[in-house]
Image (cartoon, rainbow, N blue to C red):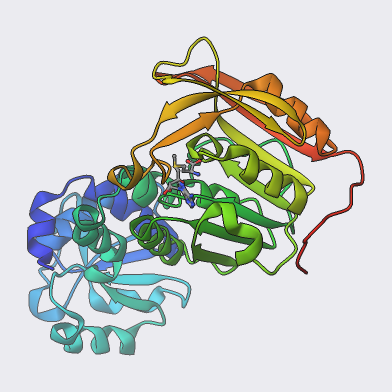
Length: 357
Ligand SMILES: C[S@@+](CC[C@H](N)C(=O)[O-])C[C@H]1O[C@@H](n2cnc3c(N)ncnc32)[C@H](O)[C@@H]1O
């Protein structure tokens, strides 16, 4: 990883560094007036940092000099800092190359001493892995969500607090992040594609998730793959990718009392319908819309060659048969068809066959 190359690219760097500095909390002081120092000052100028100024070691200190609008102070002034504060050494050198400077500052000040590279962790991981893992939501996951706390979509209108949540098909972890922010007891995610598993694992590490478990497996088989009792199933963007959606949905309704169900439904707005398929199921007769799927070619797709889409009214009928209410809380039409977001809640007690405890 060439830090100087990254510094010269400087794409969005001040904004990101500003967020990284804020994450440290406390006051920030900067030692050094070379290349990296200009980048750090730009980051500080983005605002919101409790900045204590620019400092320089005795050998480089020139009284009354200025650096990018700040009076340069001697290192001894760092003695005023507290243990909750941080001194950043503005140099692209590795920590070992900064040994003398770091130990000198440690003698003067109670503050933590970090070098510039310590602020670049997420930046370096992003730079190294974005093309290798081909993140679609790279900008969102690495910056907007991680540093600015943004969610990909608004949380569904239910409480996840202290609940065990099963997330089907997390893709890159874009919704896992939102779910983890709802204070669940635990989120268990099942993803069918190894690449998506790798992306979500990386996101889980970057966000420091503690109660998040990721399983590589087929979502239709979740009752076999999970031993815990599930409170809520988050089934978003996946049911309409299945060629056996009734199987997945029936499993969801048998293994949780609340199911968040978001995705495409068959409607007059469907763009790519290949035809219809009639099915007689335990809960009645249905006509599903046949849609193309792209198998292993497309990382967001279902795994088989085609999928079947429920009509909205059929979803409600299916839910009712299994003792659930169906409530849509959002809907829109996009380039593929009609999308709905809904919550299914258990209203009647039915014996739960095959539930594993
Ligand atoms: C459209 S993305 C949905 C992403 C996310 N849930 C959301 O709401 O934004 C579909 C995801 O489901 C996964 N998937 C599709 N079929 C699956 C299956 N049979 N088992 C497990 N995961 C599957 C895909 O690999 C992909 O990650």
